[in-house]
Amino acid sequence: MTDVVATNQTIIVVGGGISGMTAALEATETGKQVILLEKRPYLGGRVSQLYKYFPKMCHPTCGQEINQRRIKMNQNLTVLTQAEVANISGNTGDYTVSVTLTPRYVNNHCTACGECAKAATTEFDDEFNYNMGKRKGVYLPNAMAFPQHYVIDQRLIGTAEADAAKAACKYGAIDLDQQVETLDLKAGAVIFATGWKPYDANKIQPYGYDRFANVITNVEFERLMDPHGPTGGKLLRPSDGKEAKNVAFIQCAGSRDKNHLAHCSRICCMASLKQTNYVQEKFGDDGKSTIYYIDMRAIDRFDDFYQKVQDNPNVSFIKSKVAKVEEDKASGNPVLHGVDTEGYKRYANQHDLVVLATGMEPSVDFKGFPVKIMVNDEGFIEQDDSNGGIFAAGVASDALDVNRAVQHATAAALRAVQVVNQVAGA
View 1 (tube, one colour):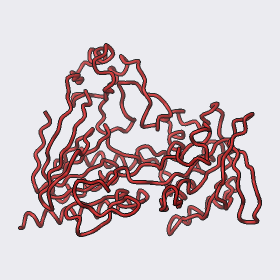
View 2 (cartoon, rainbow, N blue to C red):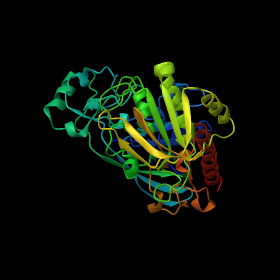
View 3 (cartoon, helix red, strand yellow):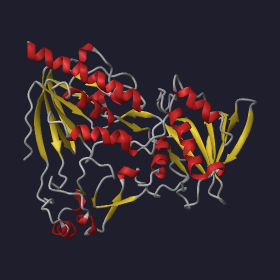
View 4 (tube, rainbow, N blue to C red):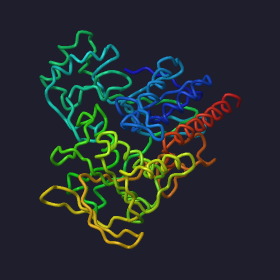
């Protein structure tokens, strides 16, 4: 059984991405006891699935490593992975959070030696790579996974393969008898840092994501570039494995559209500008990018980054809302149809690969929440006094880039600290 001590002086943070880690660490470093809950087997969230950040174009491993080091050194922080909130009740300063813990079937004796994985053969879709590749049923979620412990897929439990994995472990780290647990944790304040999910590109019928292999999303493009991704870091198109040297980026794919997401996700323009650098990184001057856009929203310090991309002769900009995408049967190339609004010229442009800049929506449906909180029309948590001791951090509050999400998480931590301080002084 998992033993966790929590009181009304405890702060619970739900979600272990960059915002959740930041909120938890900032709160603990004021002396508060914090429990960090993450439903995946590892911390890091969607940031860990990126290839590079903008505008510095550095790898996320940098920020991840710093946060992981802070977590390891912090005695005020309890981390529970594969932990999902089942219910929350109570009021400011006196919440009860019911948490379901799903078995990892691997305990803290794991050294990540990998011997257990060698005994496994069955493969499943790899969630970390957005199902573009496969992983074994005994696996380390990613190279930077924290905790650095293997996981056994529940679908292997009761099979000879699971028994073989256990027999291969020299450290007694595999426990095939682990069961689902439910914990009721007390808290004075709760921070939801549950992040975002990409809008479902299958719903954008004119762009053919559900029909054409060479139409992918911006988050999938990130994984293609990563050396640990499904192609080993080679920019290859899914249909035939050929190099994708001529890439189209369609902005506002499902965003700013009353039929899909009404809001602007703010990061999509910068993400596509960043990804044009990826094409050049792989192919030099042979790499060509075309951005189809309504308007480019690169504000304040990001405008310099935008200007650099504009000055690149290998990147073209077409001001147009793409009407539809078809496929050239002979080559497998996506063909983009629309009207260039600067001159009103019709086009039918072929590319090797199309990347849809899909927008952000909340990972959690807060509108059906068991306690009353203010939620806006887009589904994000509003900052409101009526929310009591419940706060949003990062993208649970709005569509934000990494920098702004971290800043917002720090603010959320300070608000939560104030709540538990008031309870202590009451």
